[in-house]
Image 1 (cartoon, rainbow, N blue to C red):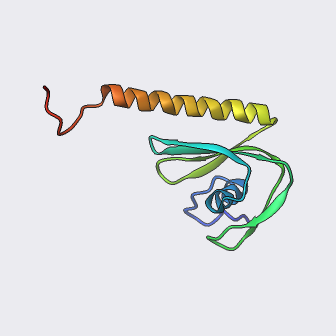
Image 2: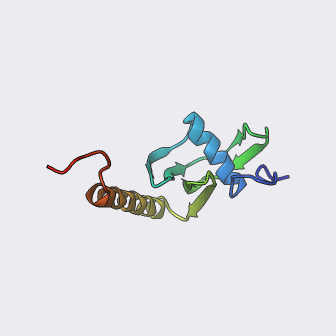
Length: 119
């Protein structure tokens, strides 16, 4: 049985559930993360396969060696993208970081400032 197959699950796959557990306890090759607009991303470059237990339901999940970006959306859904090479994962992750920085700059520039009077 799948670890994420419990009705209203927030995980897009078993690997997403396993990487989420690693993200929560910090036992991973996380190169960085970005959070903005309700989304966050973590980059994982995993050299050796391993198993982890998902706390929500006690299932053990095997995580193969691979290159992953774990994503959290503003609704609490967790999914994973899988890449052929560490370089392609890093390139995509860097693009997400740049996109989030651009959105943050746009918000700083163009958002109304509540409670601030014009001089």
